[in-house]
Length: 199
Image (cartoon, rainbow, N blue to C red; front, side, top):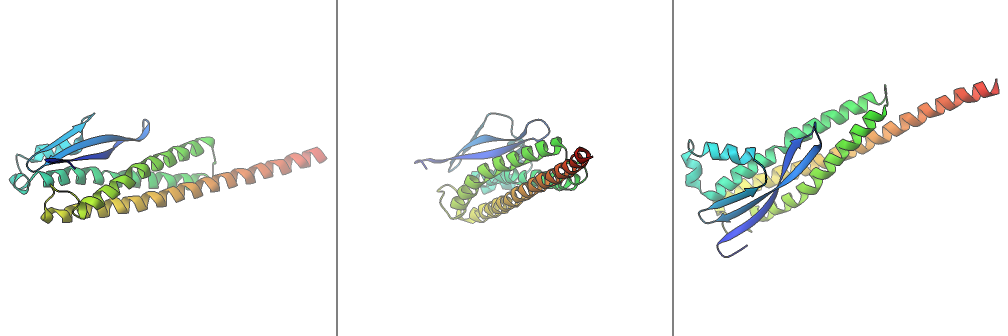
């Protein structure tokens, strides 16, 4: 917090699941009484979306720059939900496949998914705390009547954090099931080899 503005650093998720997994990028924001500056290394769909809405939505400008900041963050937070759903679906699929064909490729993919979940967890916890602080009135340049919107963002981030923890547990249990299946198959092979050795 500075005299004429507040400075925030948020983490945005970059959706590159097919190429190299989940990545996060910094979004720096300077929020004053009548200005909002955002600084980011790459093009941001969330900011571009809000920017394109401004000419058609006069109410957004009338509500002030803190509401524009909320609109940007709302878009960034909502990007988590489809990503977590994709990870959940993939873990469920792997869980079913390991009992019929427990290949090394499935284990590699499972480890990648777990890494992605760890990345999401590391970036979501500080975000949640920051949004909690803002929603409790800890930001000078966010109007009292807009705090309810930031509380909604905090609730979403809390649900996201809970979902990430559940998926991490699912990934761990799926990995344990994979190792158990592989161990059982190895035991069966050893039994056959033992029979041949006896013969």
